[in-house]
Length: 327
Ligand SMILES: CC(C)(COP(=O)(O)OP(=O)(O)OC[C@H]1O[C@@H](n2cnc3c(N)ncnc32)[C@H](O)[C@@H]1OP(=O)(O)O)[C@@H](O)C(=O)NCCC(=O)NCCS
Image (cartoon, rainbow, N blue to C red; front, side, top):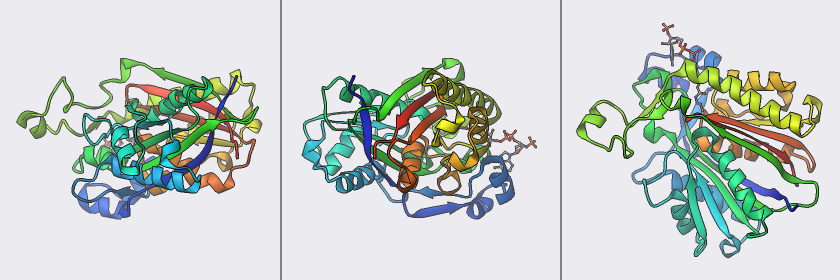
């Protein structure tokens, strides 16, 4: 069966850097607490009137098209994973296509919180494997600063803004995206969510006053589920592909908390030198963390490297993807 390969990756973060020192001036927190509990030192924030996730997604896609020498007309489909769409509708994927000049092809958003990129990658892969399309772009883009309450010290230190994009094409035999697992369980719905702004609680004076348009998180509960499920799904994908720790060149984990990443690597029998890590620079950029990791580490990847991509997020959702790097 034909497989899909990632044949290019590009990332984008906005210029403004929000440091732990600046957060210390905004809420009752300190660099030592943030660093030791999360691993985060700074995050990038998108400033500017009328700028949404599409702006960052389009920057990532523009860079991707340029570096892979791909014309917008060659793209058959674009999928965007995001929890911070510019609008409820139309889809952010539609807006990104418009901004970069991709026209008359399918484009849609996928929402699976912090697992969104791996869900979107899994969906995009199907169109290559079936032979329906030749070039598919998968984007993860989130402007988390738009739904972060900068008076709540338990969440505002965690999140940042960014985007990453990959190009999918048919793989050479033996390479590419070889397996994926996507899972969800609604048991998590009240532990990590944005209460208002959807159809259950549409925006009103009351929802704004109650600060229901921001991320609510019960951190310790999410932490427990994340550690267990991200490690379980990573171990499962390794087991069913007959991989042990020594076979894996890189763990590419969702960047929510360094302690969750360490626990996952431990369970997989992988040393910290094989774990992609950029949480210190960007914080949790939700759907963008994994493509931003691939972008930051691209020059260190070798054709044939075994990568395990793993994520966990609101819902709850969680996922793992096994990739044999194609270039
Ligand atoms: C949010 C998180 C970092 C909090 O770390 P934690 O070790 O669980 O800390 P707790 O929430 O138990 O809080 C411990 C103490 O630190 C305090 N605290 C919370 N945020 C703080 C901050 N920014 N600065 C200083 N103190 C803080 C708490 O109020 C609490 O104080 P108390 O003991 O006096 O009540 C952690 O729970 C986490 O990472 N959860 C999962 C997050 C995640 O993965 N989310 C996205 C999924 S995609």
